[in-house]
Length: 337
Image (cartoon, helix red, strand yellow):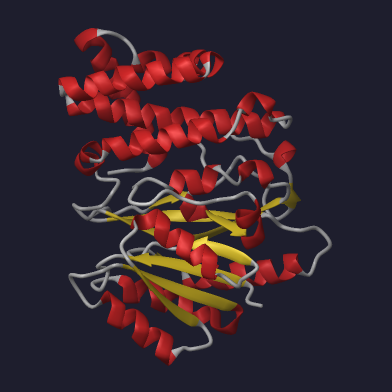
């Protein structure tokens, strides 16, 4: 059995996918790299995937499927994974070589231990187009270099585990029933959120492992693109709301973290609807909050009382101006643009 499976969703990714794959190959026989060609038609993504699988038959698998979107590509990766642990690497991103070696060494060490590791967290770096200084996202809320549970964490608003920073135990993802919706962007939030109540033991390795490229005009986190896909953001928001009754979670720190995560996703949904400036989207904003109110009144009031919730719902132009300030906070948190 492999130690770690990497899933690389690829859709017309020929221009940059090789940099991603090449950064993962140094893992050698400890790793499995699954390249999911998600119905690419505009370039030779499929041929590149097959060429790597032919050259590295014990390390690389190529999976070809009809286009199902990023979430379905992740699903395919999980279905085909044989590694003990699982990580998604987007095709325009890559990993740092030195940090990679440390991640593999730590996973080997922890697998040999008595306690089962459910989630390994490491840092990620914004490789932002044109930026001189690279922003490193570290997890100061977590004790370094020790196995921990939720009670050992000190997360506050503004600190979130993202897909870039997390490696999950493969069987945990399967056991929690993780399945991402097809043809939907922003499902990485569901990917991180849904398994959290199943996580008992975690470890924070303070290395700058994942390199998150940001800056292409067509990137899903570009603001204009997000506004154009706002219905998908709302869909993800609702799936997260309906995933759990958070009030029933016994672990207080886990519950608080998940409320905070849900809040920032709802803030992003609301902000994008406001910033679009159309009456149609302002109505969608009202509809979203009405849905939350009708679905779970206590959750509605908790989100309204949150750090930005009230700003999201102030009436008129004045309220929308305040919401722009809240947007800038959420921008820093989520990291888009």
